[in-house]
Amino acid sequence: MRVCAALAGVGLALALAAAPAYATTITWTAFGKQGHNGWYVSDVYINWTVTEYTPPITDDQCPRSVHLTADTRDVGVSCSITTLADGVVSASTAPIKIDRTPPTALAAVPDRPPDVGPWYDHPLAIAWSGKDAMSGIASCTTLTYSGPDSGSAQAAGGCQDEAGNSAVLPFSLLYDATPPALLGVKVVPSDHRVRLSWAASPDTGLVQVVRSPGRGGLRSSVVFSGLAAAFLDRAVRNGAKYHYSISARDAAGNAVARAVSATPSRLQPAFGARLRRPPLLRWPAVKRASYYNMQLLRGDQKILTAWPAKPHVQLRRVWSYRGHRHRLVHGRYRWYVWPGFGRRSTHRYGRRIGGSRFSIIR
Image (cartoon, rainbow, N blue to C red; front, side):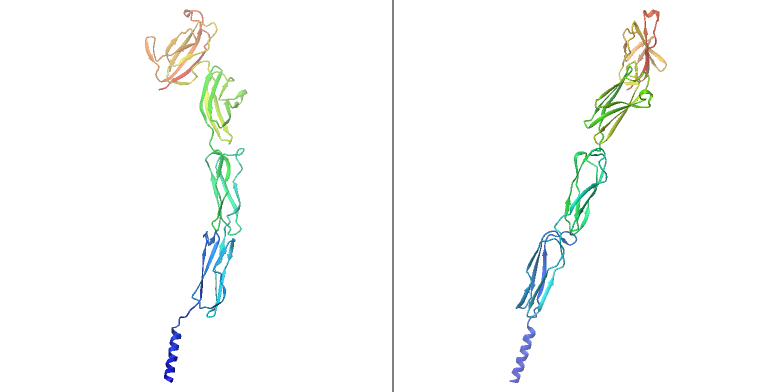
């Protein structure tokens, strides 16, 4: 009997030793949209898993699922259960950070006010700022707007918080950095007159013409200001050289200027004209003149004399003079003209009407 009892005790000990040793464990998993720097940018769900417990559970303080909806910096969630075998078993989550709200109070500040009226006419630096009550501002846009030109331009910028939420605030501006155009500028001098003409682009405002020498003995003066596309300057002297600056501005203050020069003369073509074809030489008629004497020179050599009855002579490419054949080749030419009275044989001439020069170019 004692042997049997001993054997029975050994069998019980072996059975106890072979019994599994259970331990209760608690784990958690968080689900949500991850932002930056450990922040969530959406609702967060926390699921708890309790495993390997030995029933019975005498106290269960472990919600199997928790739904977090509020923005927070450091919320923590705990789970605990009590079993007969293990007593109290608990676990806590790491701090949960939630920021679902983009930055607020955005502002875009330019580095200067508009240049002319409401317009900016050269690159503009713009800096954005904002506030974020939860995770804080991580960065804001700083940029330089340099085009395109537009009456309704927009620069896009904004701020991002530490969680990765972004907010955008467009900055609207009027921008024009392109000068207007003055095309087809022409200057035509004549007898006591200089005619200027141009074609301005549609964005051009007033056109201004400054002449040097100016009026009344001034070094320079404004002789025209307006919207017209031409100006006739009558306050000039024949033989004097005048310099003109034609300038224009647009609404944004961009400016363009063209410079031309002219020497008014009683003779045509204009003094110093550069021509590709034989010109028609003209001069003002003289009262009671019977004819005119026109002389053409190349260098110091006279190459043509003509006695027209009317105040003009059409030159040709080839002609004969004093037994020599001449051609109007490229180079510089001078010419002069006098009025003649009575018969040519009397050689009665008046004061020289004038002299001018031109060039034949290829």
